[in-house]
Amino acid sequence: MSIEHFNDLLKDLGKSVGLPDLKPSNDGLCSLRFDDRVTIDLEANEETGALIFSSIVGTLMPYQTEKFYPELLEANLLWAGTGGATLGVDPATLSVFMCYQEKMEGMEFLRFQELLKGFSDTALFWNNRLAGGEAEGKMPPGSENSPATAAPASAAPAEAAEQGAPAAPAVGNYA
Image (cartoon, rainbow, N blue to C red):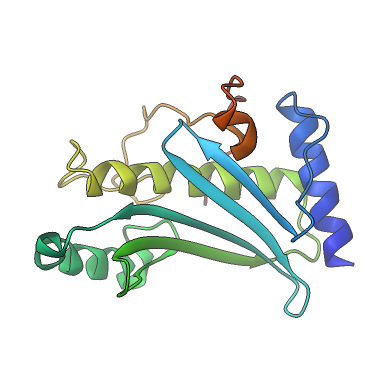
């Protein structure tokens, strides 16, 4: 049931952004590229019935860990800086992952859009922050102090983005 619902959500997303053939790969993943900076993987977990969002938002250099580890931990505290997602670091590669999951049962398309929009905005925030961008000291989207004028991210299947296809418009709001 959850795989079919996942496929339906992706099909509806594809229709809404001009990608009518959007569907998961044979491995059950759908990868979307946002602003040509962050790839978000979507996956249905058949065992738990959850829709899983995951992204590598950046990779730290060994000398950066002392600076960023406390900030990442603080962002995870009660999800204050992650909009409900969780940040983690792979110790072998120092890749910073952001992950979120929510039950798919009864999930309507609008909720899916909101989750994807919020997750992408937060992933882009952390990507910029970890790259040394201007986000230092600011809160990411989804937090109570986020700027209301943040520009929406654009989304396209990762394969299309790599082939130079135009990015699709952003969707929804993250709660």
